[in-house]
Image (cartoon, rainbow, N blue to C red):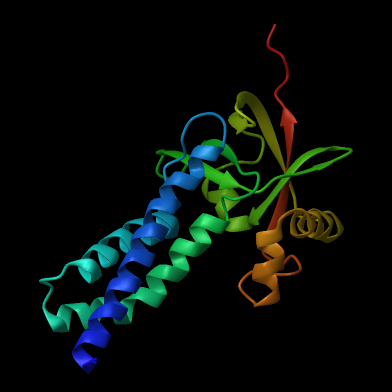
Length: 202
């Protein structure tokens, strides 16, 4: 087998792997009940990037230089694609809010349950950008949409307890923490939000 043929086979194998990951990034979200949540940000980059690079690599007539460039970029795209897939394997909820520009935003979040209610955690900047504290928002969980009013908590014992429960619930969080891709403990800029039911309107 010539070096050129070996390189071509590697490109094709990697290409089909990327195509598979790209499809799975979009397909994995179908398992969640309710409205389909379109990937955004890094997740969208991972899905579309995997499809694009995969298509380039399996294209028989691709110029060698372009194929090598796509092969070199594939680890980055593969990382984003795999993370986008794994983050959706377990329970994920959608919190419908607005961003700082007043545009609709769908926040995909891991959620935990405590005796005092439902909780999510995130960076404080994200909570502030979307004006979550005290807002009346729609929450999609287990196929049902209902009104909630997030209450922001910054006291470290609460934030750390919520984060610890999240890491305990989600295998992806534990695996990511083990390799340094996700914080094992809540950082100083992390906050917790309790999702209280909206008061009834008379």
